[in-house]
Image 1 (cartoon, rainbow, N blue to C red):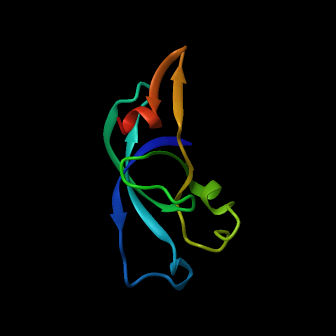
Image 2: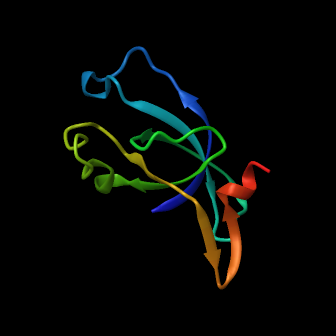
Length: 100
């Protein structure tokens, strides 16, 4: 799994029929220290995440293990919206502090 920040949405009117109704997000990856990386990923959103939220994504076959996604051609899926991240007793991210 990987931590990422939601940067925007991806809209596609022409797509595989199994992807109809799936919301896609443009994500920017985040390292273990909370630094934004120059790497991006598009992922299916199954948890209702919004722009600027930090999320947890799963990739590869794990993205297709989610109920309803078994037959979809997905490489990545947002599986959680992050509330806090602590590394070695240090707060790296807090959702509530983001909106102050």
